[in-house]
Length: 334
Image 1: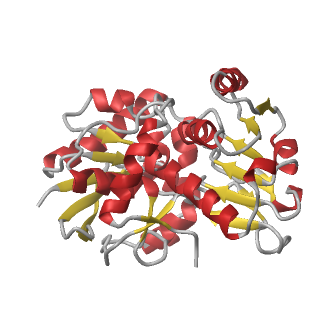
Image 2: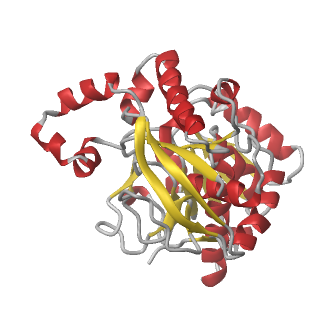
């Protein structure tokens, strides 16, 4: 049976204490100290992964014990070395491919350096995650008869891999796209790339709060380890897809009943998968990054797939029929 590996990390102190009750006895600063020096280790075995074609695979979660804030704050070489060590464990377990989860796919050059330092293919899962975001927006718009050709889209974190790919793909549907991120120079390059082939309005916005206030549809995909946007800032009846982990929109379902929050980049699996640990999602629902690693293994497409910032749009066209073939569907929530 073919195997895959996937690198995970703790999201925050609260989740860490849920996963390891012994940590409830320790103060946050000491937990962070432990994580800094604790080596990566096998977190769980993933079983009962089955395509609707009948093919079965299994995998492993490897824990890279660093919090998001630590991956951002610590020296990049130190963090990359720890991620590479995590991937080496996957190699030793006999897996054919490894996926990078959460901030492990963000550090440095989005997986390129990691791929050069291990002997199996690497993916960030950002192609399937983007497909899930795009497909969710198209389905919501169709179900509510919302004309996208008269709507405005805002993408927060558009300079990143998922944000850039969403911008280039959804330029086929929206007449106006507002893009925002910390690195403005990258946004200008993205704007020019879109305008070479599409006659639409692309606005580079410095103020993310202004960007979301003018948009009918909003995609949030940033690497900020904290919430950025209050739901009260959003336009009436706005539809939001928050891909960020931890989530960047706060106040949802409390302050605004008219705003729709779509789960960001989640996939409904065609099987009763056993992750071996609680991944804090509904049954048989997976993050797109994990699901892409599964899909590539099921398909036998064992190659570096979603690396770097500029993932070709053609990858979206390739991954969709593969997802359909194996019974992987976008999850829009309960």
